[in-house]
Image (cartoon, rainbow, N blue to C red; front, side, top):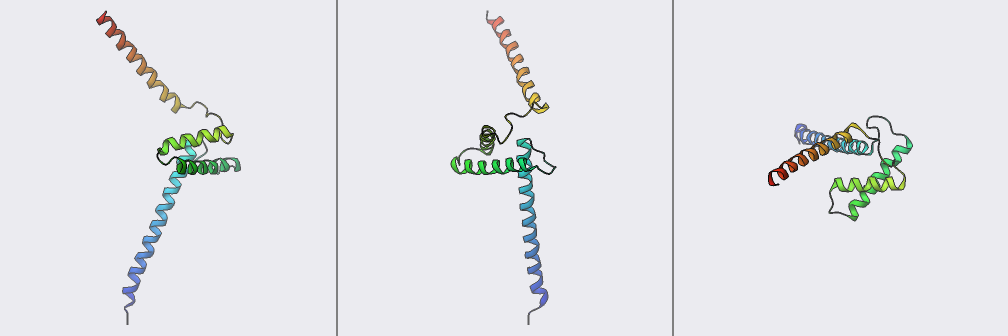
Length: 128
């Protein structure tokens, strides 16, 4: 007869591996959903209203269609395109309000422009 322990160990190990795989898939899908919600400006940790849930579904559908239509573009480019499409359709607000993040992104370019301009002026003085 077969030893019950010989059967139970591989079976238990298989069940544990299956559960870990399901847990990993759940974590990855939750992380992607949080990233999309954040990108769309929707609440990440709160329950979504029906309108917000529809916007999320519309984004996912549009993103999937763009992925099939343009397989060579990056995820970031595809997400920007999907967001723009949904804004054009009126599913998402036209523009998010100015946040500290967008202001922080603009400041370095202004500072960089000032530095380049000052350096250019210095070069012009040396040459002229």
